[in-house]
Image (cartoon, rainbow, N blue to C red):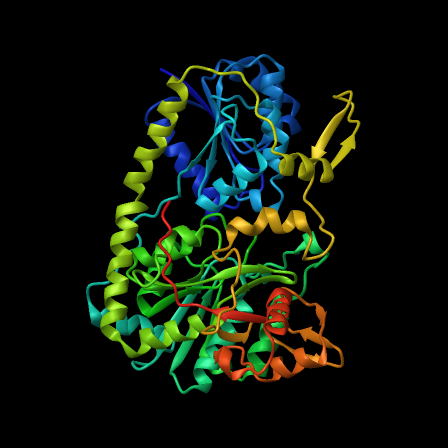
Length: 517
C-alpha cells in the first residue's frame, strides 16, 4: 500500500473553520485508500517531531502539503517522493509559499489550485516550458445533504420569523469572514440604495468580524465593528440589518432557507474559491457576486444568479455597482426567475461541487501523481516571476543554514505598482474598460470632492485622488448606483478615460460570464 504524508496548514487552525474542514476532508478521503502519516503544523518547529519526520516520513511515496519548508527539508535529506503542493490562496498575495518551494519541486510534482485565476497567476510567475510542476484546478466541495432547500414552505416562514423577517421582506444573506477586503460596507450601501428606491430589502450578515490589515499598501486594521455600526447608523438602515456570529452548518442551512438570495461583493485578495456561495447554491439560493478570483468560476451569470464585473484601476479594484442593484431588483420583481436560478444553482452545486465528486477527483489526482514517473527537472521563473521574486525577498542567516533567501509578502509602491497590477489582474473579469458611444457610466467609488481632490470614503481604499475642474463636473453628474449614458456627458473621451483609469468612474456592462473550473 502506498504511503501518503499529510500536513495540516498550521498549528492555529480553528476547529470548524473552512481551513480546518479542507484539511480534515483531505485526510478522510486519503485514509480510505492509503497508509497515511499525519504531521500537525510545521514539523521543523518541534525537535521531537522533526526527528520523527527524518526517521520515518522519508519513506512516503507522496506528500500533500502547503508548507514550503517541509518539502525543502525532505528534499535536502534525500527524499525522492512526489509532492502535491496546495496553493492555499496565497498566489495573489505575492505567492510567498510557491516562490519558497519552487526550487524543491520536480516536474513530476503538482500545484493544487482551486480556481482558474490562481492557475493563470501561476503561469505568469513560472515558466511554462515543460519543466514546471503541472498546475491543476481542483475546487473544494459541499455536502448537498447538509445544505439543501427545505421542502416545507411553512417551515421557511417559521425560520423567517425567528430572525424577525416579515412575509413581504426580500432577505439577502452574506455568510463568511467579515474583513475590509470582503467589502461588506458596499453590501450595506446596496441595501440603502434599494431601500431608497422603495424595495423591502433586509440583510442578514453571518460571520466573525476580523480586523485584518491590507498591509500590501500600508493599510492597517481599523475597528471594523465600529466602522460597520457607524455606517449602518449613517445610512439609517439599522432596522434592515441583522448581524449574527458564525453558525454551525445545520444552522447556516436554516439561515439560507430563511433568505431569498445570497450576496458576496468580495474583493478579497486571497479569494481563491469562496465556499459560502456554493453552500448557498446547494441550499437553493440565487447568488449575486463580484466576478473576482474563485467566484468567476462558480457564479454563472444569469443562470445561477448574477455576476458583477471587476477591473483594476490606478487606485484599486472596482466592481460594477449598477449591475448589483439591477440584479436584486430583477430577483425581487420576478419570483419565477428567482426560483429557477435557485434550482439551477442547486443543480450546479450537485453536478460540480459535491463531496462525492470531490472524493473521486482527489483520489484520481493522488493516483496520477504517485504512478507517474519521477522527473527531477526543476522549474524556473518567467522574467516577471524572477523580477517579482528578487524584489520581494529578504536574506537571513539562521543557525541551521549557511545562507537562505526568504520570500516575503510584498509591500507595493502604491496601488498602481506595475508588479501588483500584473500579479492581480487574473483575479478580475475585465482586463480593460473600453469607452464607446453607447457606454453606460457611473461613479465607481464612494466619496466626495474636496478642493482639487476626490476623497474616497471606501473603507478598503481610504485615499485621495487629484482631479481637475472638468473631472469635477463629470463626477457631479454621475451616481454611485445608477448609470448615465455617454451621450449625456458633454466632455471629451480623454477626460472620461482619465477618470476611468483613476477608478472614480466605471463602465457598466451587463455581459454574460461563462466561467468554469
